[in-house]
Length: 141
Image (cartoon, rainbow, N blue to C red; front, side):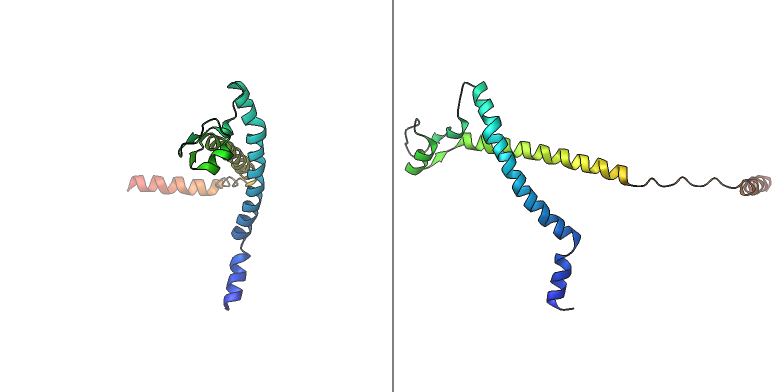
């Protein structure tokens, strides 16, 4: 088998194709969750905590003025942007939770689709009688 044929067989296996589809959908889904966190959740969180903008929270490491916006402070030197990290961590938690819910639902649907194994057929009466005779003969010996 040639190298090209081996690669074709590998690339066309279901798992590789499923993985590719998952990566593409995951990238798009990540953008949706990012927008959810940045545009909907974080404004509500900042409203609850006194109209704070978490994305601009940072600790200056190069002597910058702490009142500068994050983008300007980064231009002047290193900063510890913990507000941005908080937003990204919240994004990850939401994404992981949604994926968990999706996998859980898929597993439930798969369990419903799997055919139940048929119950073992009842043993015929003549076989039962023969077994009883065998057992009684064993007890006599």
